[in-house]
Figure 1 (tube, rainbow, N blue to C red):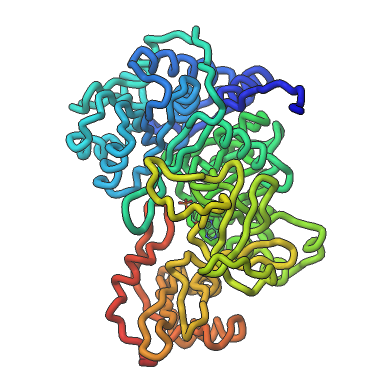
Figure 2: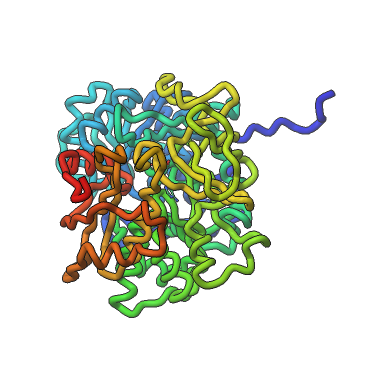
Length: 542
Ligand code: AMP
């Protein structure tokens, strides 16, 4: 027997409708690309999104078409998302930090014909447009007065283009499993793979995200997503904030410590989300300027392991709660969040910060397991490493165009490519990417744990650990360090700093000092490149 409840398709357009009706005057504040701070509301965002949809339809865009965006977090980018998906087309975010050839490859693979682009990225687009024959219309996210000379196909200023349509438009209706968004993951090997979010997965992901035991968002929140909309579905914030009527503060193109601090205090931000590198810049700025964070209550930190020093500084110096989270584009992206549980409520001091190094628990809607290479489930004892696999209604079931099928198994598990252990309280800790784990004498050494400890040394700006070939042990760890400006740490001092905090056999065989460590387009350490740089390195222990 079927239940007798209405089938109310979970379409993303319903989110902006709800926000516009119930939180009509809630602010959306952006630092514009042109410079000044811009203020609007959810009611206005909805009206302009309707115009985007109507205008796009006149361009010939229809259900299932991909429409690209290469833009910072601003109100215009948000309007584009809702306008595109409200028509049944697919917002396709491009990461401008990728190599231009990679961006061109992705545009061709997605067959985008239209692109919304910020002024900042016009030079990139001008360079690659000749190699993307499908591209016929470039809508520059600015007004006529700021539109520069360009020979891009069909180039037009967004505000002029938008002025040609009114908001007399009804959101299109279709099945909730229809694709809403497309985001390519920046794989370190091979071509990028397209992750295709559906309307349903975005809505369910938002329900997951707003929970008290996740991002804990409400209409009282003033949320600043520093994480760009082009990184892993913008961590879902474009949907979860309007869903509850949280005010949005968007940093536009400026993500340096001073600019972020200015918005956090000036706009009374209570909640923010970003990768660790952003927070390192902010904390450094606050340190130098003796700044404070009077309104900020909570930050979600993920995308890479959150260094202990970041958690400690936020919690002890600024009274801000840190929620360490793990996820990936394929998980929409929230997978786990480290939020307080009764079992860990009594932790204090160093024990609390040890616990906060972990990436946390899965909220309802995400299931996880760890397995060995043969697929056998491993115990949740907080020690045994395994391949981390997840499943749920906002986890990918495949990639765009069917590539990468080997990541998905018959039981619905998606192999994340991460290695983790899970403790008795169901709290997960990432120890490595499967391809970065250091295999020494048949045992695994966590590069992430060594890196976290190394950046805790006061003279270290950044640290990376890679496995270097060793005739006896297969691989041994090499610690690569970028010293802080003006500091000159020694190998002995760094190894002494690790002593007692790790098993003796985890101690790096050598330490090298470099000026910079290579990063990927999403700000992660590029281990592949680093291993290439040190492939002929001869350890002193050989
Ligand atoms: P992306 O899809 O670009 O967001 O990358 C996802 C990958 O980032 C994951 O598979 C992890 O390897 C890594 N990652 C994300 N969050 C964390 C975290 N809190 N700690 C360690 N690694 C993380």
